[in-house]
Length: 113
Figure 1 (spheres, rainbow, N blue to C red):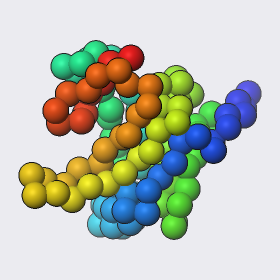
Figure 2 (figure 1 turned 90 degrees about the vertical axis):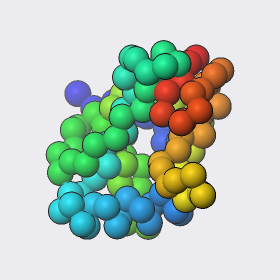
Figure 3 (figure 1 turned 60 degrees about the vertical axis):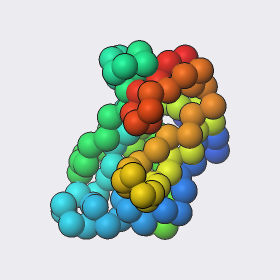
């Protein structure tokens, strides 16, 4: 059974798309899978995996040839978010700008709602 989800409120920045393309090509993978799991210092954490397998119920977010897959349970936590890639003096990383998060840890990998 396929679930229809409005994808317009989760977006992928140009810098994230470029980095996903670069990593996927180097690793020989097709997609970046983003999921939300319980745990982390703030209650929930973001998990990133490279994969070649897309599930029928995955939300697909595409930009500039890059594809991010998100499972239906994680979509609920990510509504309105922007998936970004930031390269700063302290390091480079994917960052989720999540309007649903009421608190986040300093490293940006965990959050609470």
